[in-house]
Image (cartoon, rainbow over all chains, first blue to last red; front, side):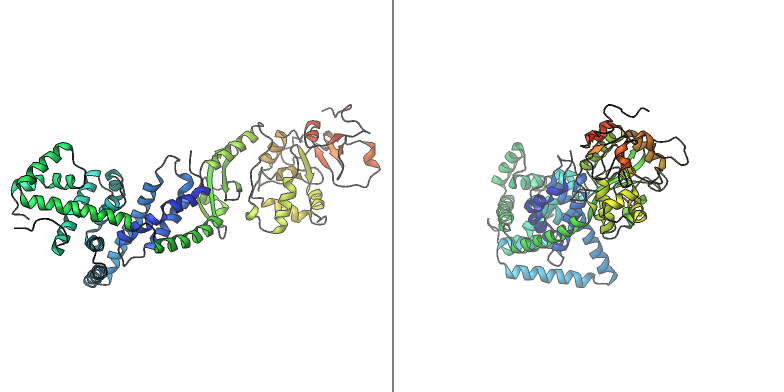
Length: 177
Length: 322
C-alpha cells in the first residue's frame, strides 16, 4: 500500500512546525528557514504518492530537510568563497550569535549560540539527536555516515557545548583546581 | 585537556554516555567508581547533566511558536496551488502498447497511448502549460487494472471520477460529455453527436474535438463513426484498435483492412429520443423524418442500456441473424 496525496494536509499539521524549528537551528539565524521548510514540504508532497504506507513519514521529512540544509550550506560556502567573504561571513555569524547571547542570558540561548558555531555536521547531529530525538541510525542516514559516526558527532558536539558553557560559569559543580 | 590522566581519557566516552543515559549498566558502574575518586571528572559529569537539563528545556520551549505558525499558513497556500497543478502519472506496458495514465486530485485526467517512447518524455503532459507532474501511486495501478479488465471483456464500465480540465475548450468538453453518454455496445455518427450537443452543422468540429480526447476508452470516442458506417479514424493511426474495441463490445465490422466499417445491416437501430429499438428494416422507420440513428451490435446491450424491443418489428421475436 502507498500513501494518498489527499492525506497530505495531516502531514503538514503534524510535522511542519518541528521541521521548521529543526531547519532554523540547522542553517542558523542568517538563513531562510521558512524557504527551506516550504521546499521540504513541496518536495514531500510531490513524492508522497510513491511513499510506502508503512514508511516513517517524520524520519523521511527529516531526511529531505537535511538534504536541503546541506545544499544550502554548500552553496553558502561557495558563495562566500566566490566573493571572498570568508572572514566577513564568519564575523557576521559571530556577531549574530553574540547578539543572541546578549538578548538571552538564559542557558538555552547560550547553548543555541554555541550550537551555531559548531561544525555543520556536528550541529545537525546534535540538533537531530538532542532536540528532536532521532536515533543514531536515522541521523547517520541523513548525514551520509554510519550510526557510529553519527554518535561520535553528537558526543563531540556535547563536549564543545559543555566546554563553551564552562567559560560562562553557568554549569554547577566544584570549581576546577 | 591533553594533560588529562590516561584513565580519565579512557573513561571520557562512557562518562558522557552515562550523563545522557546512553551507557550500559556496566559502564555506569565504572564511571561512578571513577568519579568518586576523580574530582575533575566528577565536575565534568555534573556539567553534562546540567547540560541535559538545559537541552530538555530547549526541546520543550519551542512548542507553540508564532513564526512557525505563520510559515505553516504560507506553506498551505503554496500547497493548495501545487495541488491544483499537480498531475501524478504512471506508464504501463499494456497489450495496446505503452499507456500513460494521469490523475489530479479531482479524478483521472489523461489516458494516453505513448507512440514516441515509453516514459513521461513521450507524453503530451510535457508540453501542457501550467501542469506539474510527479510519479503516481497505487490508485493509478488500480485504474490500470480496471482498464485491463475492460480490454479483456471482464468489465463494461470504468466508473472513475474524471477531470476534464485537459480539454482544450468548453466545446470540446461538451463533445466529450456527450460521448461519455454513449452506451456500451452502441455506435453513433459524428453527425448524430453534433445533433446531441446542439451543433448539428459542426460534425467536423466534433471529429476534431474527439481527435484530442484526453481520455480514450474511458470516454468512448471509439463508438463514434462516420455517417456511412466507416470507422474513419482513431488516435492518429490506430484504426485497428478502434475496430478491436468495437468488436469487444459486440459491434460487427467488415474485414477490409484499409477501410473498415461497421455492418449497419447487422445492427439494431434506435431513433433519437425513442425508448424502443428496432431491426433496421422496421416499417415504423420509413414513416419518420430521417435522423442520425444510434446502432447496437446486440439486443443484450440495447436492453442493458435501458431500451425495449419495438412493438412493431419485434426484434425480440425476429432477431437479426448473422
